[in-house]
Image 1 (spheres, protein in one colour):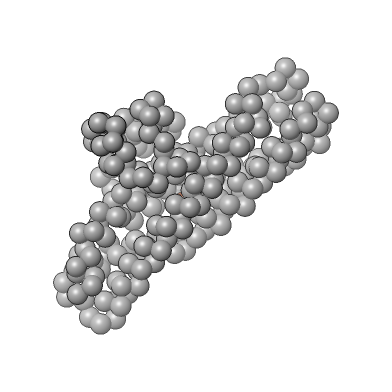
Image 2 (tube, rainbow, N blue to C red):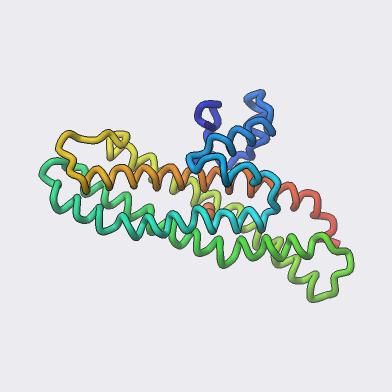
Length: 230
Ligand SMILES: [Fe+2]
Ligand SMILES: [Fe+2]
């Protein structure tokens, strides 16, 4: 959907959705609505996302996309290994496909662990404390710490998203746009289908974090900055 509208949403998508829409003369609310409606996961679990708070959105991302990626990386590892063993003679690019797939796993798994251990808990602390005006010294310190963690993570996570976007593009080139080769056996076909499903899910995952979650977080930080510094 982003591609259809000319918005670079994954590889270099760390530009706020509103800025991207303004630049293209698009209505941001309309784009968000379309994003929800046209996602690969269908309409059922998407329509409410724009109204969620950052911690609620983070929880949705963990339950939906982090779970999917962990499961898919584990499930695909032996399948990719098997296809490389059996079909190396058919396709000389298979070792590269295997290497890029492994790299995606070694980037995404710690990235998601880090979000769950540091970034998302900081969002929850911020959400609870930034609204209050009766914080004691300990709570003020926790709020300042959470704000610092959020700002630091916004930078580092964006860099990691860009890296994964580049790896997905590299994988897509190596698998020739997921075209099914004539010699593909059932395992090979399964591998290509599931690698593409992984790609689509990671792109949707990153677009939610970049286009929805980070936009909300940056907005909250901007409106709460005076309170945090007070
Ligand atoms: Fe994530
Ligand atoms: Fe992420």
